[in-house]
Amino acid sequence: MAWTWRFETADGSPAAPAVEPEEFTTQGDAESWIGEYWKDLLEGGTERVRLADDSGAEVYAMSLREALDA
Image 1: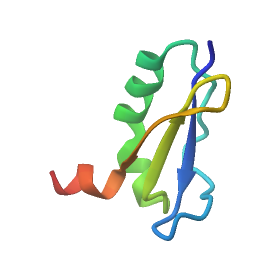
Image 2: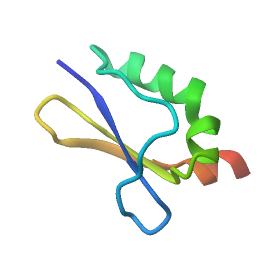
Image 3: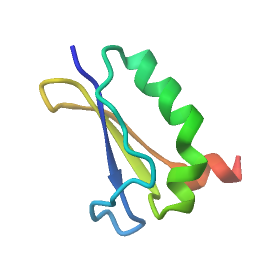
């Protein structure tokens, strides 16, 4: 199974990520990657991310801004 991140601006429109993601073979790898690069993504204009599986189904979404405020 492949896992991919989708990137959005604050208004929900697509964002070009400041760090190019890869396609991940596990959900854990995808989550580790976002854990490493979320600050760079936020500084580059990405406010929200959505994780999708290889069928394109959204697994979950989260705000990078809220992670910064936590």
